[in-house]
Length: 498
Image (cartoon, rainbow, N blue to C red):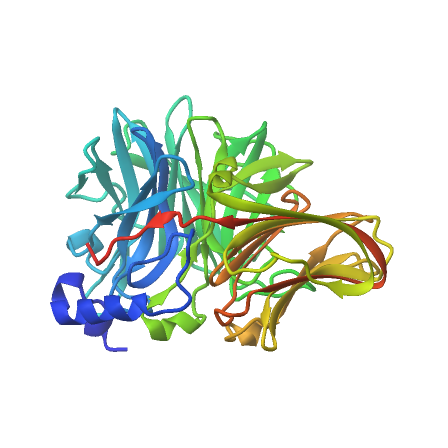
């Protein structure tokens, strides 16, 4: 693609182009109802997720003029309760010397009554060589954001390439620290740590020392925090080889848990790498700790270098619902934040025994809903749900009792996406009881297995009239309890680009 086209600023587009693009997006049948999505163009990584001045603030990477990865802005959304969100326009606008080719990902931290936003400034020189800078912008209580003139980290340390980005900052008792995703000069991934007393002057400390060797060629979007006495490191390693049911997407998002990071040696004693999400479309998550002490995570419901059906409709991608993280036996559990219950409307409940059958129930249908299903006393070979079904379309979620696996199948979910990476995803599950908790929106599903032991996040693109829900038991019986709620519209999007 022509570089001038890819790195156009919003103010270089005519009002006619912006108006036509906005109208095109409004005609899309797959616009979401309670997920954060772009007004136009492409959304990717969540950024600057913070609780400040009585509100949750969540920014995201945004290119307004197309569905390719062009000149990135930070777009600002905010919420008082994590359920209802409203757009607040552009947060960080690129184009200055140290972010001339994009305001890339970063994070937020509150200090002295202001919200500090640390991010990677992307630049290119005349030879098209990349030079990343770690920059700072500051938001005051009135919501005004000012960028600092000079970067706070102005060079890449020796031993690393120009793939050096995505600072995640936090406050310890003694000082501020940030972790940055990096690529070594031998083309392997790492995460490095800087320290600061004031958020302005930063000192390089070295790499987080893990046991992962030659583990992908780049680690994006690192995030370190401590939860319930354990250290947790989130990373997005690029270049992993699929292993059975694991690492099936183009790029992965996962985590390590273990003893808290040794601040002096940067040694991190940890367990195995685990994927955060077992679905098709999840990447670049970011966490924050709110005023209630909860660790909350939001991810990008999408992946780089994958085409999506909405690309031709002028927009791409959305963010996941907020999820509370809990550590249990060294594993991260993910649970929808309780505030989402505010969106529930018109509950319907069923309770029955299924025996060698597929069954539908009155009122159990729709395109936007939350549903909790308990399958108990499983004696069949498989049990599960077909949803967003109609005219040959369906998305299938099943528990295979013989193989002890939960399987999500989107081979007939409507318009295809990412077909080169397969149409099923699976994970292990044990026992004669399984619980599925689904959040279905116009073009997505997020599925929490057994209270968040595993999660499947996926985009689906069925026809609007594919509304059916059915429950099944194959070659045996199962007890079923299910409750379904319609969900209210929860995101107040701007009428146009701000």
